[in-house]
Image (cartoon, rainbow over all chains, first blue to last red; front, side):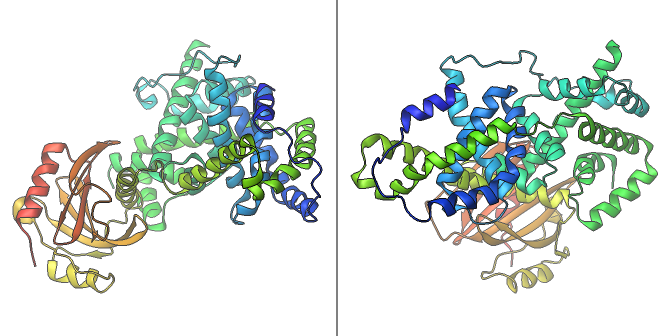
Length: 203
Length: 257
């Protein structure tokens, strides 16, 4: 909520007493039609970025306000990619700034450091990962592994596997070249396998 | 295709981002190589596991309601923002913040960074990496400079020197047309041992936009650039810096036909 309050401070409701333009409701309708179908995607992405339900809501709400403000500049391409790019931008500007200012933001200390070991070097066997993912706590294991990934790796996995986006759209949303999308995805998968292997050995 | 190349492409294969010839080549290798097949099966199981088990957080209804309500409230400031000059300072600030967000988003669509040199470097590396990943090294595969040069000239609005550097240890493999920095460019492809080198060439129509020459190492690639006779040359490869320098020296000293 801190985020929404901060935005309200900068942009208080203005222009009292001005006549309403007739196309206002059609702009709202246009927004509803184009972007409401993608609110789940926006929230899921924000939720995995912030790793916190309330902060994710604030990020998505602010992102939607921005999207609405600039509705006329939406070129009709991929509404989902457009909205997700704004969600990401909102996250990095407002949310990060508030994090820096000391607003309490949950932070996962376990952010996994890339330590270079290739999971395929570990004594593994293909069956083991498949078996691990069949266990009844597979959901917890997968969510934990994803949450421990560093941000830049986590987001490409979320966009690729949960949103099923092609490399081109992931590159557009994250503002990185396609080559970087590829190398991050590959690295992220290695780290996830490593994490799951470790979890398997600890069991 | 060898194991190293296969492993570099396994993710793109899994994500169905490879073109058909690359898929066929990878299929063939996987059928013959148990170790690579094992890695593929593991990544594939991981992908299926994430898709099946990772939590997909749908937007809570209260959030959807809140957004609908705030869109209603936002109508007036949004409309007013077309009358900037008469507005108090803070409204302009808010609109400027939001505008910069959109501008940077649009920039992000194209490139990672707004600086011209940075953009071009990223573009050049991406172009090189893309050709390797998709195995699309050359449109015209020939070590004969008299085949490559006219092929490129007929497809571009400029002509460039093409020389086979095989005597100097860098055989010419061919050329292709690529797209760098919002224009079609020539790409000459050379090989040195197991490494590929792309030389991207285009007319330097904006002298001074980026420094005339220099080198950079990024993401494991070495990039060297120079200008000559009104053309910009950008060489990129995963060769080490010393070998890269040797290549560029060979290339520039052997100015060909």
